Length: 419
Image (cartoon, rainbow, N blue to C red; front, side):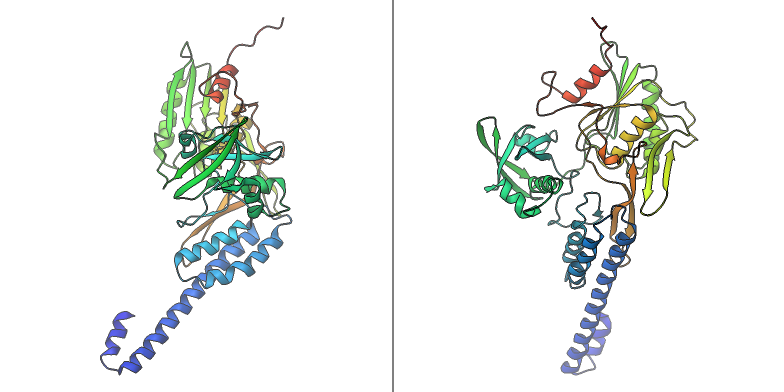
């Protein structure tokens, strides 16, 4: 278009040229607005028809269209357009709904991009967990600390401003975690109380770095080296991953039990990889979860056939924490349901449902959201999954070190005879 305009400029008067140029720019702007509006509509319709958790909340989503569609269509930059899409998604209050593209102003995803897990307990903002080696951990924040002020403002007032005066307890907990996520780049100032002592903390936020270490770590442990330890962390959907997993399980065969560590893990990004991992621990045909689309029948998922080696069949213990999320939560639940594993640690992130993805036709931004409810075999929501051996990180037992691993090792100790 610019070349054509330059050619016209040499043959037309300045006035005529600028009139044509202005018309062309207006046409381009109109096309861009139409494309952005079409993308917003594509996202809105997909969620309106397929989002699995609209029971009574679809009226809020319909109001979101009236609020956010004009902002999306009128966005002057891609950053403004992404902000409009994120504003609409925020009305779902669902941390499992997200965009593939973010901006520097985008809120941190909970829990993937945060390091503090807190909730209201007895009208106090209590820190339940802090991600190991994170910004908050380095700054000295600990489980059991009570947050009093955030950036100089009373924490209750700040949460009330974010969630609303009459917000439900679950919404207030979510707002508290959003508040403590802090800026993407900058410093979060906290005043926290530990017992009767008040102290100030400055948590420096910076651009995130990729996860360290291999996705699979395997070793033998225990005094007799007869326990297996297998860590799966942010497993990629790569055929080599399963080969590495098979090699690790082969090395750990013959152990009297295995610890599968899913802490700080988003798991695989595709369900096929999760199911392939489950097939290494449970027999083909074994049920492991239920799924339910909105208005559709309930489906029973089973372990597929095709894995040639027999499954690892010694007792399993799975480690979870608040950063076990999404597919890692599905894997933890599946190991308990199909392989009779015991779960040690804290509840996971509690992300709801199984994801579907829609690519917007003009911007090519992918929108992911829960398109099916995920259920345990007893019919309870997967997000309600609780550990069989809970660990209170604010008051752990077993002395210094890793309290969750400590309890997992204790789970393999022989039962003491009754007196």
